[in-house]
Image (cartoon, rainbow, N blue to C red; front, side, top):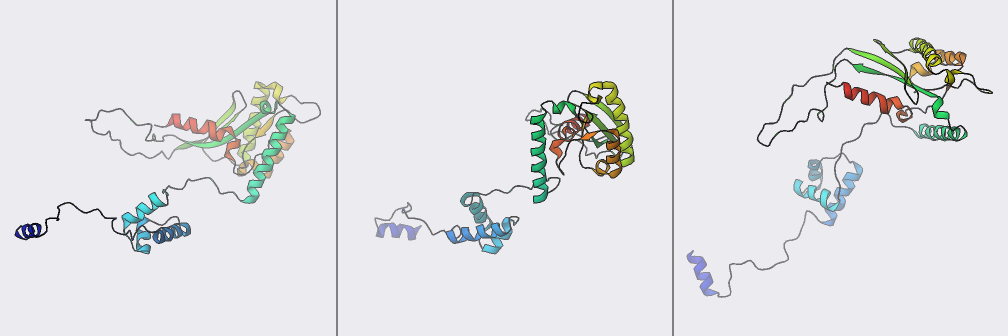
Length: 264
């Protein structure tokens, strides 16, 4: 205190307030470091902030500010897809879609002739999603807890076929569907279509049966035994590109909603 008093008495212009100054130079967030981090992320987008800090020699906080504020990047998880298509498979998708669209323009009532089917495993018990177990509580109440349960080992294979108005045929089996089981199911489907939709099964003039079958490219569906059975039965197929679940309504309309309602 004595030393400070002497300094203030010796220099009346001395003040307790800080003088205005431009500030110290920013060594961490300089353009060179920003470009270096940008190159490292471009080479490997899966690098962590700690790895980038170790490579550049600056703090973790400075690296985080460079990524979020200067480069304006964010880190997100990868989205899982059934399969990454090759260029040839993508071209087959385009060609098949164009042929189906052209066929739809030539036959406006084409979709009324389509019978689509697929099979899926349904577990006897499958736990609810976290969104399904959300409950309203007050701010004073503790968060509700629930024991973690796994889906059951017991399961059944559901095979279903439907047209644009209703479900025509469905079966439950305990084993996977192979080519021989699938041909027997197709035989029973023919009987259901002949009884429920006789107009769809009546022969049309100058072409094959009015019924068009749409199923995916599972091994049981594309087997030679199955194709020979369909040819002998006079059933035409609607082209289904490989790895295209959006073509069949069962994959994106029926099975997800059915399993969501059966959870818990």
